Length: 404
Image 1 (cartoon, rainbow, N blue to C red):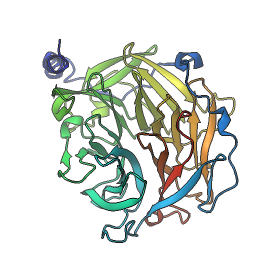
Image 2 (cartoon, helix red, strand yellow; image 1 turned 90 degrees about the vertical axis):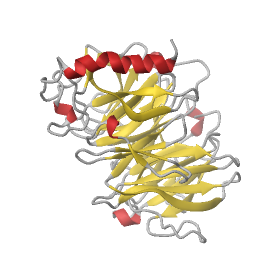
Image 3 (spheres, rainbow, N blue to C red; image 1 turned 45 degrees about the vertical axis):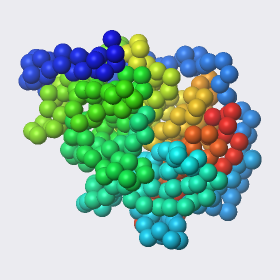
Image 4 (cartoon, helix red, strand yellow; image 1 turned 135 degrees about the horizontal axis):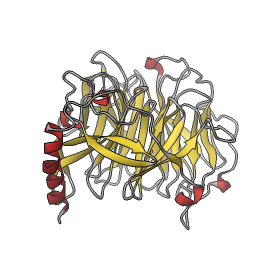
């Protein structure tokens, strides 16, 4: 069966459940039942162990501690124009981000602004093929607390509002097409999105202490693999003994009841944060309990990849934004703690990739690689001053290729 037909059938066949048995069910979600993922479950031949990266060196001129052979540069500062001839000033409180390749061999880094009261949105930095910053511009404005989000296989950015009945906005990284709200993805405290490119389904986290994990099945996917996010089926996860079931959410608009309270038996995750997809698995973090999770799509099994409470050396705390290296390494940004970007390797080891010095009241946000994995972008959301208007966005260059 063609994927488009399968997805449409899945939505239609679930409509009876939405209107029927689950419509009256409600209650607070329960903690998920799960098991730890053995390191060898993630080990595959040829993947990097990052051992040769070496220890972090002393802070460089930008206050960044990096392994030998790597360097940093500041590409944008909140309130300042990143490009002299462009009028756009870089937004405050930079958060989740992603990189998109351009037709001329360059790329665009997009970054959310986690500001309240209609002052949020998304900004973009455009680089040419040599890495020179050539333009800066907004792609979304007048929204609220745009925290994290996710890139789609069809090259759009999904920016998530972290407020009650927040929405997901689909944005054009090049700024040619106006951003569009996607209410079918649910109205809740959105954090991040990851797309399964095989099925076209989306997975979403919710940043609340009793938040849930969601899955969205679009009604249709065209022949180029682009999903129509204007309609589809929103479901919530229920984990029992490490096996996940997906239950339809009766009212994704949350007109009367928050989505996380609509389905009896759903599972609570303590402040769901960053997400990423790799090789049939959805990875995500929870800040409230400092965990990293893995959901294996084919088996519907849920694992703990990392748990600070049981780790022999709890190097990672404040687990937040997440990026996936091309060899399966997980890069997890710390919200506070000692401001590290930490790597979890497929073999189960953990080590810092970098550390931002002197930014004790900030958090690391928006890690994202260029397609060739030669450059990494991220932000210190509140900078050394610890204020939203003091955010700094960095570029890291070095021998990532073949290692991450």
